[in-house]
Length: 459
Ligand SMILES: [Zn+2]
Image (cartoon, rainbow, N blue to C red; front, side, top):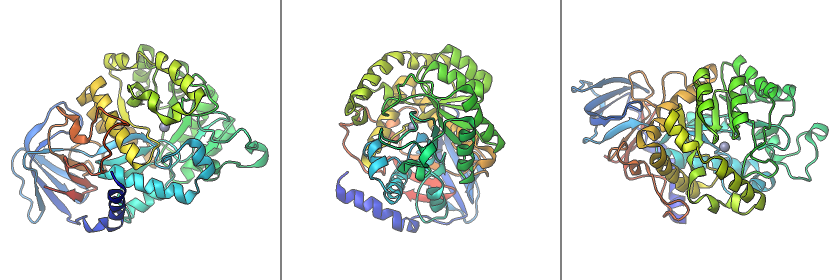
């Protein structure tokens, strides 16, 4: 995408309301339905949307009075896509840039641009895995801005030196001197070093209206101080986050790489394991017992991995990546063998252009390694179940997400082609950094509906 088209797509944010129709009733005719849960298309169907929910699905024509009719022309109607783990507020540059050089104004403006681009790419719901609070959601939900539904975590919670620690080596100790980082002052990330501090941080996140809690219970690769093998939080500390989430009727999502950390999280009641690269048979059994989910960024298995700048530019990260790649070698085989409840996620922390490339490549990798149907379920119904774990903190409690079912939210796409056979209709691309930059809008996505409103219709 060149600068001019980027400008145009940003401009579209302000005049987008003009595209949205306010019809209370919309009838889709002549569509093949992928419902988000079954490995098949229901051919030649009709779908009636009343207000913001799906009212009727039928193989025979539906009479719907003065409904706005969209002739699907035999194309595929499917649930809007759901990002299972993204970071809208972390948007281009390095983590040090975010800490040292980004004001809240710039962080928020960039997040807005990324949210709009994700929406144009077909993502009608986005679970934010830490950093973003509720301001952007309120702005989108009030109709001022086009964007996905947002399930936010507020500040990442992790101990000093963990994957959530954005400070520099010269940063003063916050326990003595108060919040010392840009990230903690803005509730993007918080260092919490005891049961009491973790509870306080989790309560602060829910007080802000965030829907779930994100903890950093193990180390990572791109960050500075933490080895990926670090089991950063004790069982007691993880349990403290779970206790607060339980009290709010919600759940905890946990960044966890090592087997030890993953099992510790599941035992403590964490509902979604993030990344979970050491997934194996023991973990699969425990997940079944606990009715838990795993969501994974498949780019960890990309042939392009060594080209990631955050890893490449930092010798410590490069070393970490090498040992991690060896330790994670059995992930794909184990997921194919044990078929856990798996959610799609990109975990992109780049700007618009790079996140579109990363998302396209992630869809490709997931399809190639885990199969198209498994990937599509992960992008729709499974992620739809995951966001609903937020229970009473769910900002969108009226219907299900990620499925084409009567009573579900009318968050729908009409795509030109069968995604079960070809994920490129959703952007899948074998190339990553060397891919042609593209506009957020995909020609193959003909209709985007969210909450019963049509935001795009090129049929
Ligand atoms: Zn993440």
